[in-house]
Amino acid sequence: MTALLADKEAPAVPVGSTLSIYDPIFLGIDEFGAHVNLELMGRNILVGGEPGGGKSGFLNAITAHAALSTDCRLVLFDGKLVELGQWEDCADEFVGFDPERAIRVMARLSALMNNRYTWMHAKGIRKLDWTHGLDPVLTVIDEFALYTATYGDKKTQEQFTALFRDLVARGRACGMPVVAATQRPSSDIVPTSLRDLFAYRCAFRCTTVGSSDVVLGHGWVSRGYSAADILPTNQGEALLLSEGGTPRSIKGSFLTDAQIKSIADYAAWIRRPNRLENQR
Ligand SMILES: Nc1ncnc2c1ncn2[C@@H]1O[C@H](COP(=O)(O)OP(=O)(O)OP(=O)(O)O)[C@@H](O)[C@H]1O
Image (cartoon, rainbow, N blue to C red; front, side, top):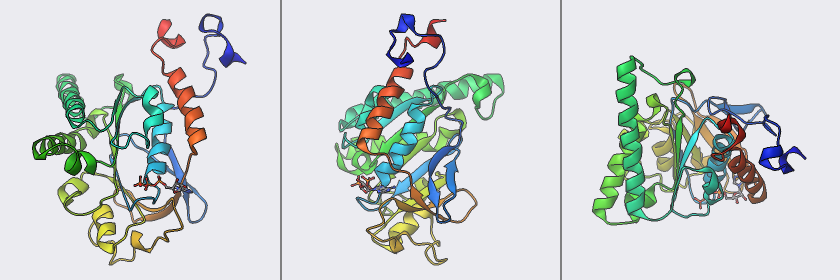
């Protein structure tokens, strides 16, 4: 009822819950049915696996949390438009298949990182947190290989790759984490030097044991953790590895298109620039 009131008549309290990007993000359940949550701030997440394994579902669950977090700015890259497209109204930037635009947005993120580090240096801050009053900026990229190896020419691909790598390397300490997914987990698309910048790695079903190791890190297959063992019929199952741990079998949370639409509508409403809190 409250939500139906016009802005000027609405009480100065939120009509529903909002989240913080500093809250743990619900990702799904483990093999014992326990909730699996992830603290994103200060970390990057790499997601890989064959088409149809459940990567976009996983990305949508994280994006939903971020969209409902009014302390988080969102930058979305979706070369297919339809995987993250429903969140466009919640995002500060939504990049589709235009490689030049992808580079421009990445370059702006790079400039923002430089500004933040200059400010942090002046203030003597080593790692940004919620007490510093700067909104985190989450970048979510579905199928980054489209930008690094498919769209554009060699020059634009190299430019994007360099800026992307810089964001993954430097973003996390200044409140700019990255969640990046690819359906091509091969060593040319995800070289070890890039993979190692991701503290969290999530492997959905992979076609080969080599691809599983590309996502999780070399040696996990030989220790018995292979995403190639996930059944093709078990979509949404993945091996999740967090810094210093061992891969954990999870079943990712999944939002239907209708659920995404209603969450995205609500999130766009609470994120609108003239929302009540901003008018005080
Ligand atoms: N956690 C889940 N639980 C149940 N079903 C799921 C889950 N995740 C995905 N699915 C099912 O698998 C289908 C494909 O999932 P999704 O689009 O996320 O795969 P993908 O890995 O992103 O594929 P692509 O690489 O082609 O984009 C979904 O439409 C859904 O039916």
